[in-house]
Amino acid sequence: MTWRQCVDAQGALDSVAAARALRQARQAGRTLDTLLSDSLSFSLDDAYRVQDQVTALRLAAGERRAGWKLGYTSAVMRAQMGIDAPNFGPLTDAMMLDSPAVLPGGELQPRVEPEIGLRLGRRLKAPCSVDQALEACDAALACLEIVDSVWAGYRFTLEDNTADGSSAAWVAVGPSLPLENLASLPVALSVDGAEVERATGAAAGGHPAAGLAWLAGQLAAHGQALEPGDLVITGGLTSAQALRAGGRISAAFGAGGAVTVEVGRPPASS
Image 1 (tube, rainbow, N blue to C red):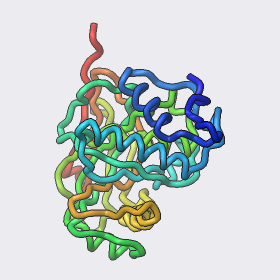
Image 2: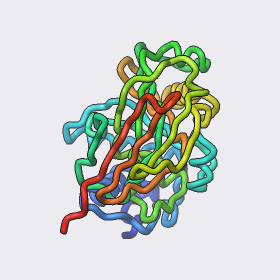
Image 3: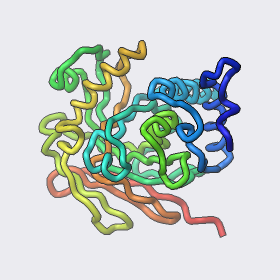
Image 4: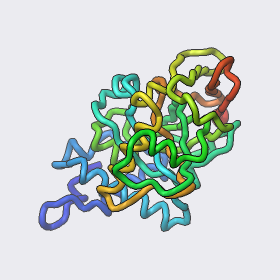
């Protein structure tokens, strides 16, 4: 497609038109080969404006805000995707899946990464320290994020990825984790029962709550805040693994893998 149709008469990006095109592609089960950044002068602020409009379309369709995702808080994810800075995107209730989960359908090119989710027990305003951010939480949760980029082959810039909500699609939410010692919490990721990668909570920017403090500042700049009940998934701890049709991916958190979370994808239709 051409993105020139998403420019208004003054030559500025029409964020509503761009959001509508992204939403329609996803609903039609199509990935996009041409990036917004290939066709337009496209800043990170522009990207968040498009993201806001995509969210508005989801809310207008009956979805409700449920929290936020952080992207690229770990060096391993930045290296995998060629991205040099973190970003964030919204989560809605339609993205929330209880573990053990099965994708509900409509996926494009899903990949899975283990994350530590932090649930807010009270409002968190910026500026705040890592300790203050953690103190605002009433739970830590074992999670798997299922990313599903609208951009073909996961080829994108930070700006294009941000417009697409940082590739957020679903979150498989598992059991609770202790809020103490999250940085040293081990996690092992397995694909179809075979372990493929290990990490600790420190992979998420040194501590999962570090991203939470950063997010509070970012949201404040956008006139928003972290609210009680918000779930924030704090960034992939390992690289993201492709979830094949008929496959399952799981993560085991803690000593001996005591806490597990998993997601599967239905077999391909014959």
